[in-house]
Amino acid sequence: MTGGTHTEARAEAQHDTADVVVLGTGCAGLAAAVSAAEAGARVLVLEKTERVGGAIHGGAGLFAVGTRMQRDRQIALTRDEAFHRMMEHTQWRSDARLVSAYVEQSADTIDWMAGLGVEFSDVVAYYLGAQPTWHYREPDSPEITGVLAQRARELGVRIRTECRARDLVTDAAGAVVGVTATTADGPLRVDTGAVVVATGGFGGSPRLIEQHTGYRHGTDLFSFSHPELTGDGIALALAAGAAPSPTMMETYVCLPEPYWGPGGTPPELGSFRQPNLMVNGLARRFMDESVMRHPGYAANAVGRQPGGHGLMILTAEINAHYERQGWDFLMSKLPLTGPPAFDASVSKAVAEGFPHILRAGSVAKLADRAGLEPVTLRRTVDEYNHACRTGRDTLMHKPARYLRPIEDGQVLYAARFSVGGYGSLGGFAVDDLCRAVDTQGLPIPGLFGAGRDVNDLYGGTYPFVMSGNSTSFSYNSGRIAGRSAAGTVVVHGR
Image (cartoon, rainbow, N blue to C red):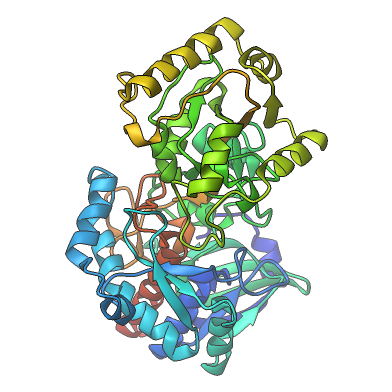
């Protein structure tokens, strides 16, 4: 039995065998391949593109708790605390067993990578008040996926590029026993004891993004888009009987391209990261702007506004305050402490016709350029200025230290924010051993998942309070899936 109809093609297909077949050579796929090979399995990896390493080339760093680096820096966060923070972040909607497995293994994964030659230079928090969990890869260290690919080959793992999986082959009992694929040399059939699906999600497919999330890429969502990530593995797993998991984007607030990125701005426009007045398309406030330090939470606030946008407003005097005192919020690895040539950077964006950064000499002119109702914007600014004068924001309850008025007679700057995303999140369900499960919660023999195809840890809102989770879950779930798949092969004698 298969999920497709290609009986005639099979007669001419190349044949191959492997204990474990891994689909994808990104963070999760290579981690799975190495882990399965370390457990003694014969591993074959299929990659549909011509390049090994995945869309993000291994990432800049990983979440982990309980590492030696943290102990050396007297960081007191425990695994218990990290587990509960993650579960509370999703209000216990995520799979507690999977979260626990991830947290418990995270420190060992740092040691595992260090043993392979990956160098970590620091462990940092994303913003002041967040937890230092992001183990930052030394910039001169080799890319993690490159290190894993080399280790995989040393272990005898075979990697076939330009080889696109087409179907999962199942037996009469529903167990996955093979994969069919398309190669430059024609169709391929691989008989196997286990398949690990790690194809990176559907973040490169505008059609699937809109289908699964409601966002329209380039209109109300500006995510990192890698066109090869088209949800192939998710479709294969669902066709083989896996239960769907919630599918959504891993979101944060951002300026639209080309100024996108977590937090919304490049360093030269960092004053737009700060807790300045934010209004929606109706010219009304809708958030305590100090939430901007947590781009995931800010995205939740912005995303529910008409059109999915928010407009941040500040004055030349507010920017001068940042030049004197420094920014309120800093990213851990941002190489600056204050705004460098902010006015020149805004002027350049305006001159180039970038429609989401504005400059005006008055509230009325700003309203006109931003397409806002001028009377309403004037009323909103007046209400905000009253809160600044009294030191009490009775509407959004922003801390008084961040209340800075929008004074008349000054140059006004504005930036329109939207929802951004690292990529898709989730697709099909797995258990804490990364075994694909059916709608009854029962494992599907021979089918495993890892990385973005199965990441259902944090409900779409990235937990910047404990940063490093995107790549870390991919590596850790890949390790779990690889070991589990190899163990299944041994147990069933395949």
